[in-house]
Picture (cartoon, one colour):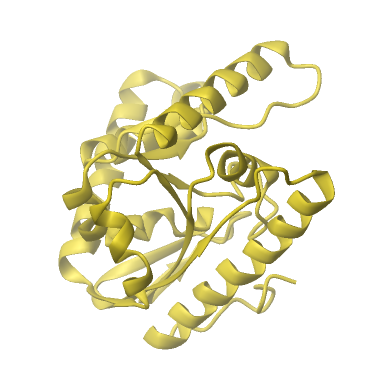
Length: 243
């Protein structure tokens, strides 16, 4: 089954279907942006920046496009895995080209080299004024926990970090590790913004861990707030405040 899923034709079909779904949800759901004034000054000065959203909300991600499309120079960090391939193809179709990067397992030198190359590409893109969208709990989780990679990029680039809590109702929740939310057309949606946040250039390992915990709590809080705004009940085990 995995071999079939990895075939280029299957990946292309899945990418096309996801792109069509993303466009349908953008056009038919009544989206509301909350506290987006914090982002506005950074959309006009072309400063490099990072924007974080949970992996399980990727199917809702095009709701943020009205902010990013006028700005231009926006990319999404996507895993180089077979799962990430069709996601990358879909996002590219809707105007969000990707940088392929993921953490590597210990002992896997090939993936470690790819991770370093992706990290350098991300640093260069943000340093050159690009907006980089990251799902900091992907591609393997745990769900709603910011991994150190996002903080490391913020530290190295000194770019402002914005959090995007997304939700829609009615919606379907998949029984996946990231509890993917699939919005139904013609419903209500919300994007709750928070930021900017910064990672100190001299942050050490313990401070990076503290920032991971803090940003996890804040992003989960923004996500819960978005759910409350549209009347979507959080899952029973969803973090209320990232803890």
